[in-house]
Image (cartoon, rainbow, N blue to C red; front, top):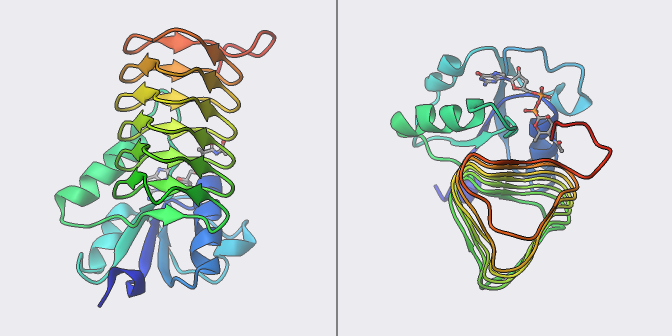
Length: 215
Ligand code: JB3
């Protein structure tokens, strides 16, 4: 069976998962189950999808019979999303790449396994998006960017040409990174920040003036 026909198991049943489910259902994909310790019924989109409470419940589906989608958002200071990816990959499961129909993704870009490109995001020619990275709604990844694995490019963030990010970078909503810069691993760029010089690893660049010191 082609991967496109394989049913989906959605890991996580919150806000990020609901956007992914919306995209998948609109594309005619079958979501067999949502795995979520928290109740999912408060969101209409999950009401007709069976819910399991624990990740180990996903193991009742064979790795060759399903594709997983990681519905847990990537936020600074939490490695939950990445650890879920690693747990299931260690058991032989594969992750579906999810690209919204309204996203604009160049056929000259490289999108690796498990990447999630949400509505109205843009990925231009020559860009490479690493495994399991989220390019969130309306974000822009310009030409020749090299975005590492397990990043989160938050809504409306802008990476200008030839920006390189290493693994585990968080770029907050509406932040801008100007061209040719490198953002080293595990750094956090706060919402609304404008970054005009390269950033060392595990650095926090706080957001626009007047915002809280969170992200
Ligand atoms: O800012 C935006 C546009 N999106 C944010 C996203 C990137 O991250 C969003 O606003 C949230 O800040 C966050 O989205 P997420 O991860 O959907 O957050 P929340 O709505 O709190 O849902 C978390 C889901 O993960 C809930 O369904 C939890 O039950 C579930 N969860 C927590 N731990 C887990 C686990 N699910 C599984 N399968 N395994 C776990 O260990």
